[in-house]
Image 1 (cartoon, one colour):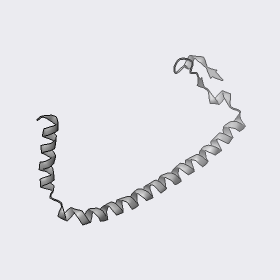
Image 2: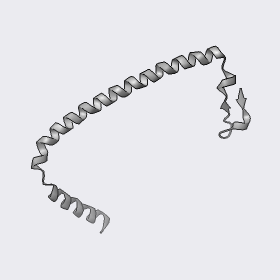
Image 3: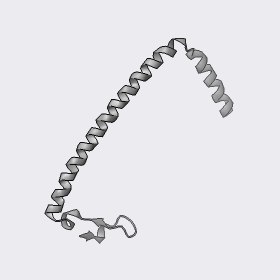
Amino acid sequence: CFAPERLTGPGEAVLDTDTALSPSAREALDARADVLAAVVRALTDEAVSRLDACLAVHDRLEAVYRPYTDFAALDALSGELIGALTGL
C-alpha cells in the first residue's frame, strides 16, 4: 500500500489509496466527500450572504461621512506622513 519510491520528504511515504483501501471503504469515503462538499457549499453561501450584509452596512455608513470628507487634505496629509516616515 505504500510506494517507497514516492517519498515526499524524510520518512514521508505517499499512501496509495487505490491499493490501500477496499472498494467498500473507498465508496464510504466518496459518500462522505459528497456530504463534505455540500457542507462547504452551504458554508460558502452563508459567508457570501454575511459579506453582502456587511457591504450594505458599509455603504450606508460611507454615504453618511463621504460628503463631509476632504479627500484632498487627506491625500496631502498622507503624503506628509509618508515623507516623514521614509525621509523622502
